[in-house]
Structure formats: C-alpha cells, structure tokens
Length: 267
Image (cartoon, rainbow, N blue to C red):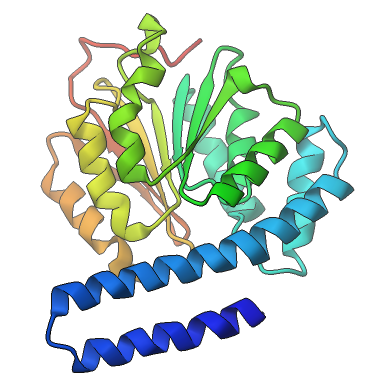
C-alpha cells in the first residue's frame, strides 16, 4: 500500500501541471509516463511478487489445475490482476471453439492467463506473450514452467507491444504451416494501445486472413476506454465484427479473405 501512497502524490503533481501548463503535448506525455510508471510500480512490486510467492509455494508443481486454483485462492483475499475463473471460463470457451495453433498474448501480468491458454492448445501449439515489465515477465515465465509447460511451447518477449509486434513474424516463419499468422490474439495490457496494436498487427499481416479471434479484456475499465477500438471495428464491417461483448471481455472476429486461405488451426 505504501507504493500506492507514494505514486498518488506524483500523479497529482502531474495533474497540477496539466492544469497550469501551456505545452499540452509535453504535459500529456509526462502524464502518460507517470501513469505507466505507477502501474508498473504497483504491478511489479505488489501484485507480481506477492502473487508469485504464494502460487509458487502453495501449488502442486507440474499440475496446471493446481496452479490456476492457487491463483484464484490468492485473489480471494488479495488484490490481483488475474482475470479470474469467471472470465477464464469465457476465455476457455473461445479457445475451444477457435482451436488456435498460434496465440499472441499482449500483457502477461502474473502468468495466470498464459497458463490458462497453454493448457488448451494442441501439442504443436505455441503461445507468444509480450510483457513490458521485466520483473513481471521473469516471474510470469517461472509460473508457466511451474505449471509444467516447456520453453518449446511458449515464448516470453520483454518489451512494449509497439516494439514487439514488428518482430513477431520471425517467430512464425520457421513453421511454414502457421506462417499465415495468429489464430487468436488476447489483449490485456493498456486499453489505449488496443486500437494501435490491432492496426499494427493487420499492417504486419500477423492476423490469420481466413479468421482470427481478438479478445479484449476490459478489467472494469470505463466504457470509453474501449470505445475507440469498438467504433473502428463497427466501421470495418468488411473485415471485422463484434462477436461477443461482455462486461469483462469483448471478442472481435477478424477475417480478411473469404475462405481461399486456411490457417493451420487444427493441429
């Protein structure tokens, strides 16, 4: 809690600058940097460290269900960034329906969703997860290994989503069968990056042209946080549509081609 107490005055100071300053662009940049710093501080020190310690010590190593149950047990009495069992079950339904072979996760947090995704992928499936905070990435990767998965099944990239997306093609090219792109993309990072990242993924041709499900985690965010990307989707009826819209998750269906190309999503 003391970390939050320290970050709040810093954010308040930035707000004062916003009110009185003349250089709006620079002030806005400072505001976003301060907010990102505060979020990383809370996530990296409060959530990730304590969650990792609890899950690592209390779960049965090598048992996926035990890892997930321990995450949920922790969240009953502590603040947590895990999506939880309710949203997790909705995620499971999407994964079982889509049957993806290649999944991209933007925003790793404590590794809960990564484990949940990996347990439903086919034997040759692969998860690429992108996490900005180095500590979160390190501890989240350890939790994935604790759950019993191997490095051949997943890849953790420590960088911003904007920096990672242009490099992702290299992780798909070695396997020609899956070079068409990702069948499933889960966004659980900064909601303001959802639309820029969707556009970047499309620009880099990383979304399977014959069909890709894009999941947006809302995490009790304000409705306007997702308004920009949802408005964009509604204007792109030729390629995008909102398949499911829930309080905690929105599923976007993307399809560039009418069916001439089939991505390998049934390994």
